[in-house]
Image 1 (cartoon, rainbow, N blue to C red):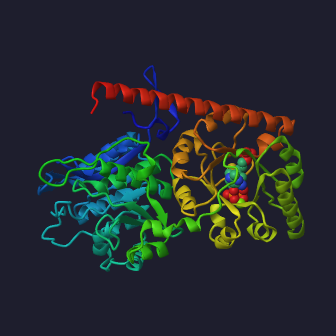
Image 2 (tube, protein in one colour; image 1 turned 180 degrees about the vertical axis):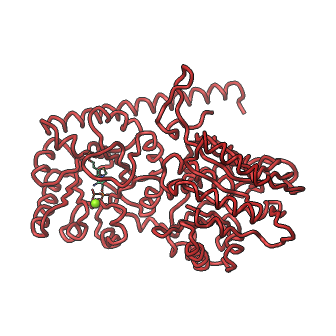
Image 3 (spheres, rainbow, N blue to C red; image 1 turned 90 degrees about the vertical axis):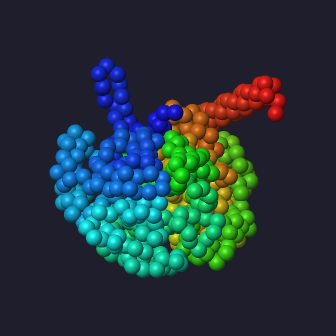
Length: 553
Ligand SMILES: Cc1ncc(COP(=O)(O)OP(=O)(O)O)c(N)n1
Ligand SMILES: Cc1ncsc1CCOP(=O)(O)O
Ligand SMILES: [Mg+2]
């Protein structure tokens, strides 16, 4: 199967007389695993699965199988430098993954080389201290101690230790969530920009692998069901390479980590045996099905898990926001005055948002009250953007909040009042965070460039949107950002439940006509999608009955 084409950069360049998509280049600086499961070999397989171009700078050659590391030979300083300079001249990296650095001298050499690169190139460092068979991979003369990586810390956009490595690197105990937080804080003070602690090794939670991601601005736990397999050789290398690849594709760090984790979970679920020892994970191409994505948790929830709670305990249905009464939202105008509601609601719109950014408190209160009354009059689902206190006070149908609002809004009060909640998201991580709140719908954006709002994130495009929609289930989804009549069909084909627009209505020469046209186009696109789904289901049923006819058992 081909790597997922969307994940390649759009820039195309001529290659002979064929047009070829230019792939992002990712360097793997690591050791060769002759057994094929870890090191450079795992890195390149991962990079291929992500649709980036992997280059290798080999630090050491190992004679290694699934049961032993028989010999390790460092490449010479000259050879490492030659790989670096040769690649840099022609195949410069968009992102770098560093694995086995087998001696202090190599650390110093790499530090000198890395210092010459622009600091904008992300560097993911996976500390490789011991091979999965238990043999050491360091060549420091006479050293029985693990090589630390302090020389390289200041270059690390992300360091990815597992629990034993975190303990070895910091000299601290890492048995409880609080201890893990303290140990990572210690690495952050040493210059590492972010740390992802891999919880695959035994932790205080039996059913889940709990990974901890922390940076100066963010802290989150990712919970994945434990995949019982002995075939886990190369998982650390693959995870770090997957993160580097996703960063090279333009994902922000938290999205890259989520996507990489899903990649790893699926690869582990399909892992296979090799030799007498641990087999390897299966490097399957993107996209990745929903069941492999982790859950997004906070520290209090992880502490509860350590004390025996289950994932289901953390998200009881009693903590869910009220569902939409009209699940079929259709076209969702986002407007800045009650005057607009008066123009649009008579056209048959059933979901609409009042998004006022400039108004004094008194005027705001009057507008929100009038919007709520109009919603009741037209039996429409009127959402209030931002102003959750007034929405609560005045008894709104729903509120729409951005991710930055989630920390300060009184979500429990909104939920208890039966007010519906819509939440914005701009990628995998925010989507998982929104989902953890059990909202009434999740907005996905911005899909195309928009002039309505200055966006800190990149446009997501319809291919990523198609991946987010199933991930948001069971919550209804709304696509927003730069959507107009020309783009609507492609957006609707992703299966998104609703389409939110601002300027396609408010800046149209005839807003009523534009609204009716968009409503009709969306209804048609949804009908076509339904017909397509039915045809696919029929084809599938036919194929199954043909198989059953040939082999009834
Ligand atoms: C349907 C819908 N989706 C997203 C947004 C954006 O909301 P938010 O992140 O709160 O940003 P502002 O709209 O406040 O700028 C939205 N309003 N509606
Ligand atoms: C508020 C908001 N949030 C994400 S995109 C957006 C603006 C959408 O406006 P338009 O439909 O004019 O692009
Ligand atoms: Mg807002």
